Image (cartoon, rainbow, N blue to C red; front, side, top):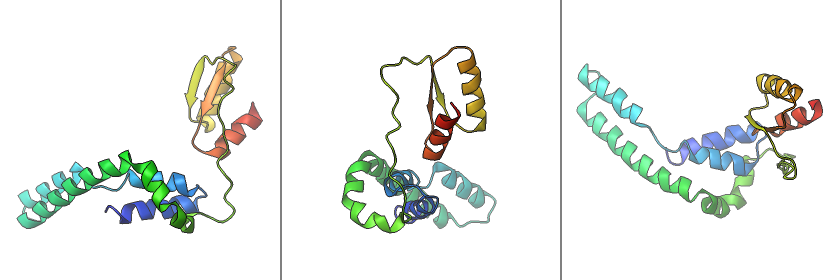
Length: 151
């Protein structure tokens, strides 16, 4: 769990065109099993489909992965620096650097809009029509480029 889940997320995000840093940091957030697993197994034990020992194992794995992933997330940037040389394997060739899409600090913003998909752009357009200064935020660099082209 602590290694497999992050590698899967890192691989998928790399295939989608995200940079290795983004994939690594996102992968660390899924490195544990949740308390839902314990509830699910307890239900299986109560109806007789799962042995008691399996519930104990899932509980132990849950406690270990939840505790370890807390520290992994806390020290995620240090971990990234450690593993950065080998993470290039998970990055698609020719992936552009993530641009600095920071706002112009000289312009005050009336509204901060999270998400620049079709719905977000519609809201942004309506707010701008009302004379509001809108700061749009989206994790996808392509969505940000598209929003800049539209406005």
